[in-house]
Amino acid sequence: MKSEKYYVVTIFSALIIGYLIWHKINVKYLLREGRYTVGTIVDVRPTARVGYSVSFRFKVQGKTYEFVTGLYEYKRGLIGQRYYVAFSPKNPKNCIFLWDKKVPEKIGDPPPEGWAKIPKVPWNNWPVVVGKRPSKSGHAKQDTSSSGRDVR
Image (cartoon, rainbow, N blue to C red; front, side, top):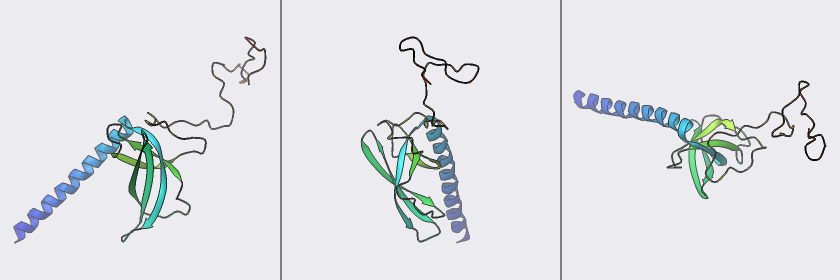
């Protein structure tokens, strides 16, 4: 009887350890090789145990995916919030919700295939001037090639 119990505990422990190893490898793969899109929280429900069940949706190539993840502390106003989601380009069902990467308001809708990297947002509201180098004073030089107007 005791040997059967130890056998079951050993098998169960091996399965848990195997899952944890697989999960860590999968997360590293998604962050390294995956693509990124925007996931929107659509529902938050308390679970029977500690925490909350959070449903989120995202689109890849026009197809909508909905998944559930866990949250230990409820924060008001989560429904409708946007966070980045890393997904496998080969199988978008293989995804992770990135709680630490909230999508800034400046970021619009993602491309259908997602981004290769999380897009960077300028920390200021200055317009981005392409092809102009700042002078030593730190301001964009005057463009006199076509219109003669300052392009700052």
